[in-house]
Image (cartoon, rainbow, N blue to C red; front, side, top):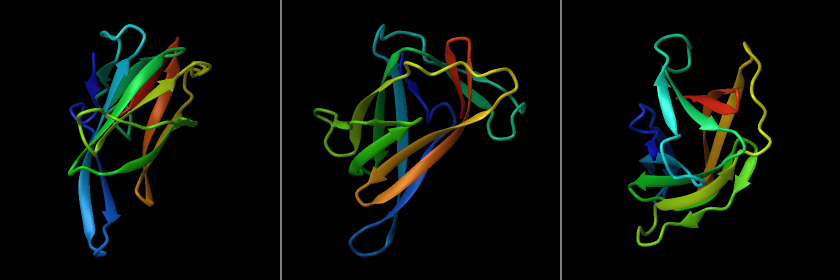
Length: 149
C-alpha cells in the first residue's frame, strides 16, 4: 500500500527562487511503499490532540526497505534527499518527467524508542541550489517507526 503523506493531512510547501528572482511555490507529495512485501504495512493513525505538533502518526517497520517517491506540482528538479540520517540516491521516475523521483530507504539498525522519549525525524531535500526541509516528531516502538504528520 502506498501512503500519500499529503492525503494524510501533511503537505510540504517549499519556496525557491527562479532565474528571474521571483518567488515560486510548489506542492510536494511524499509516498512510501514497503519494497519487501509491497502491501499494506504503511499505515497511519489518528492521534487527535495528544501531541502538540501533529494529529497523525505514520507507522513503519524497522529493519525494512521502503521506496520513497517525491512528486512536485509544478514540477521541480530535486538533486538530493537526506532522510533520518541517511543520504539517499534520487532516481528520476521513468515516464514521469521532471518532478517525480524515487529513492530506497533502509531502516535497518533503527532502535525502538523508549516509552516517553521523543525524537525529531528530519527530511532534507534540495531543489536545484536551495536546500529545503520538513521536520517530523518521531517515536520508534516495538519494531515500528512512528512519525507524526
